[in-house]
Length: 455
Image 1 (cartoon, rainbow, N blue to C red):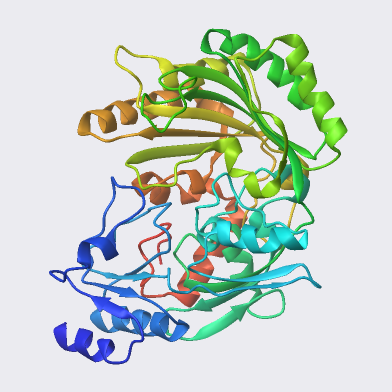
Image 2: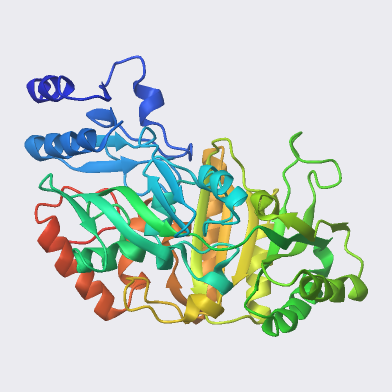
C-alpha cells in the first residue's frame, strides 16, 4: 500500500494525508461530529486531475472511495478506504446573459448566493447557505423557492464527472444522458465523483420571509389553522409548520433561549403586497410571541431556518408525507417535546411541497414528487444518552406516522438510515435504471460509501 501512496503523492497537486500525520484528524473530520472516517489516505483535491488520481489509487488498492465536500450529509464511513475532499475545487463562474453558474465541488451555496444576487439572480439553495452546492443538488434539493421553481436538481444543465475507470465525462441531455438523469436526484455518492456542475439561476432578489412564533401550548390550534391556510396559497409561497426547541445556550437571543414554540415560517418570492396580506391573516388571528416575518433580500434567506454554521453532533431524519392531519401534529409534538428529560430534538418541521416540485420531470431520477408535504426532524446529540434518546424518538415517530409516509427524503437522512433507504426513495422504474447504470459505470463497486446500490 505504501508504494502506491508514495507514487500517487508524487503526482498530486493536492495534499495526501495518512494516518499518523499531524493533519489527519482535521482532514478526515465531517461537519456532523457524531460521524468520522478512518481512511487509509485522505486526498485534499485541488484539481480534477487530483480526483482522477484518487480514483485510480482506490482502484489499485482494491478499496472504496468516498467523497466529502463540507461533510454535511454523511452516509457510510470511508474506513480503510480513500477519502477525497473537494473543498479545494473552488471554481465559481456566473454568466449573467444566460443566467447560469458553473460551480466546483468545493463551493458552498453562500458563495453562489453572494455572487449571483448583485446580478438579480439566485440559486435554488436549501435552508442553509453553508451546505455544499453539488452534494445538496445530487440529492434533489428542496429549498424555500421550491414551489415556484422546483428542486435544485431540476435546474442542472450539466455535470462533470470522474468515473470509476478514471475517465472524465460531461453528463447532460446530449452527452451520457442516462448518467445525467441519474445524478439529478439519485447521485448520492454512488456513481462517480461530480467535480463541477452548471446550473440555471432564477430571477429572485427580494422576498417576504421569516417566522411567526406562537406558544408551544397552542401547537394544535396553530397547526389546524396552518393546514387550512397553506392549502390556499399560490406557488410563490413555500411554507412550513415547525415545533421548535431553542437550546439554553448563549448564542440564542434571550427571548428565545431555552423555550419551545409552534412556528409558522416560509418564503414568498412573488408580489410583496400579496405576501404581506397572507401573513397578516395570522397577525389578525392571534398576535405571535415573536414576529420575524417581513420583506428581506434573498441574500438573507438563512434567517428563516437559522441553521447552525459551526460543526455540531446531530441526528436527522426526513420523509415525504401524503398530507396533514391532527395525527401528524401529535407525532411532531411527541418527537420534539415529550419525555421526562429535556428533548435532544431541536425541531420537527413539515414543509409544504406541491407546485413546481410536483411536476413530473422525465430528465431526473427524483421521481417521487406527488407528496404534499415533507417532514424533517433534527436533534443535537452531544452524548451517548442523547443519541439513544433520539434513536428511540425517531423509531417511535416512524411507527406513529405509519402510512402517512410516502417515501424517505435522503438529503435529510444520514448514516446507515440513508445508505439503506434508497430503494424506498425511488419508483420501481427509477430504481431499476439506477441499478443498471451502477453495474455499467461502477461494476466493481469503488463508490460504495454512498447510497447502497448492489452491483
